[in-house]
Amino acid sequence: MNNESRIKDKTTIKSFTDLNAWIEGHKLVLMIYNVTKLFPKEEMFGLISQMRRCAVSITSNIAEGFSHQSYKEKVQFYSMAQGSVTELQNQLLIARDVGFVGKEKFHEIALQSVKVHKITNGLIKSSRSHDS
Image (cartoon, rainbow, N blue to C red; front, top):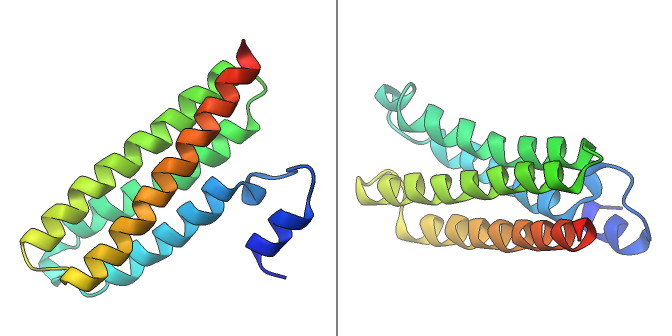
């Protein structure tokens, strides 16, 4: 059973890995690692490193936010994850514009990043509604 079908069968979320934001964010991380393997080697400490760290930051902040009991703290970490998505979107545009990422691959990754941003925004809204 894959993560998505597992999520639909559950009534409660027991781990950060059950969150759709983390599941989709993890897919984005893997996409970034795969596409940056094709970047020029001289970018190892430049755009490759920045994009990978940024992508990992998304799922790391979602995981950390999940572990907090306070909804205010959850929102703080989910918001940082969302900021990392936006930062990654900027880096992806740069990678496309300098010729490291083709249009088709760019579009695929950009769509996934928008999906992660929207789902994370839902987590933020949900957490804020619990805090009221």
